[in-house]
Length: 137
Image (cartoon, rainbow, N blue to C red; front, side):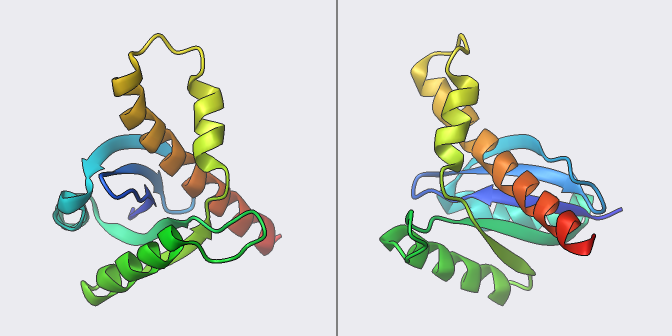
């Protein structure tokens, strides 16, 4: 069965999560340096099978484009050029939600950053999958 990737894009690193196609449960996988993201996705797709990618789109509170959302749209275009199907999902507050989940973790702040990115990717993907499931009902 193919996998679905969720990505929380950042300028330095990207959190990655995965879900099996047909599932609404996303699992954090790892944090990938941004400059290695495309190669990482290619390797994952070759090894695991990839149905599509859900890329977090950081819109503002009122749904307007931000500098980062414009950058994410460029990343989307590059991934599509690379042959991947990419769906965007508003990631508003995913990082803040991940922070709440990690607030009491006993990790050092530096190591929490990577975990936060992975958790954000998982929240983005899980929210997208749940929304798709509700839309089918």
